[in-house]
Image (cartoon, rainbow, N blue to C red):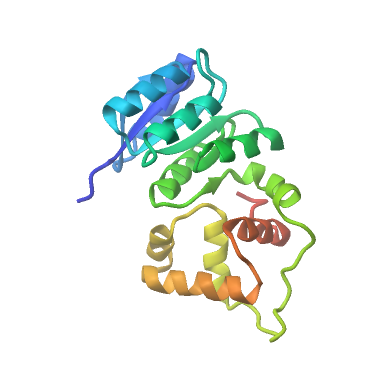
Length: 218
């Protein structure tokens, strides 16, 4: 069996931290190995313990989450950072991603979003909370380009399923398990979908999902 993901929690509110620990520790593939209440301690613990993931609150004393993320990515580039915040505005989202975070989850979102995000970034992907995905539309892309790519091709049902799960933050391995496919088949469906719709990045996939209304009921 694979070893559980080793996770550090960096959150200055003890009650919130305990709630997060309960949610994460209930997962058989996750283990909270340390908890800290400020940004400086988050960097120190990451250096000492070399975790897989640090869940980083943005607003913390001594060193805020943005600065902590920058320092952590400099000293421990292999450690993934999942930003946790109540802030929906675009400015926070951009700054967190530029600092090196692999994901962005809102505290007010359901616990399932946090778990999806942890697994997504652990698998090497990126994760944006669906509640902030609309920010991606306005900030990173221009007018819609998601039309048939000259050949009149449209997505198959399976390609659409794969694309939707990617937009929701699932990793290829998780999608393969859900749809009873091989990871290589999932990757092929993703590549075909992106070619047909003239997409170049996951941001394009999230925007397409927003346009299709796929994220409205999550």
